[in-house]
Length: 133
Image (cartoon, rainbow, N blue to C red; front, side, top):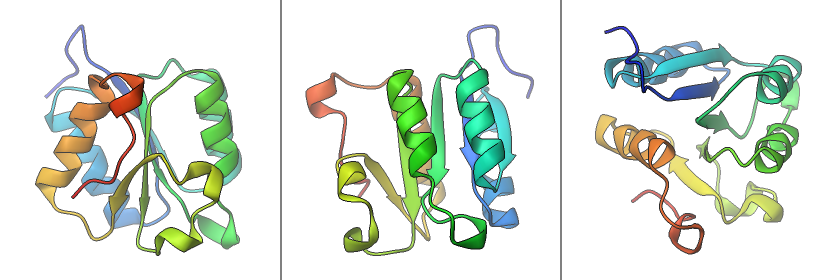
């Protein structure tokens, strides 16, 4: 389905090919435009800085032991809502990012769609950060 005129632009940062393709397919099927996906930090930072974005889905742990936190900082500065994905425990997430929306791997289609809906229509700031069940 091509993006609608009012579609969101969602950045996908994910280094696992199959996971990235699954997220990309879901974003597109919901009528939104995909930026990326990218799986390494320099490209993710460049896109986060330069692209018009409505939201982002970011894998915490990237290639070569890189972490996505510099991208988070760019997106926060730009006031772009984001969701972090990880298979790791909460204790392995930078405390500065502990309050961000978190999507646990492996996630199912309904959880992913819920996160995309949240990115496209984020609630008030006080209610915005939590874990996806």
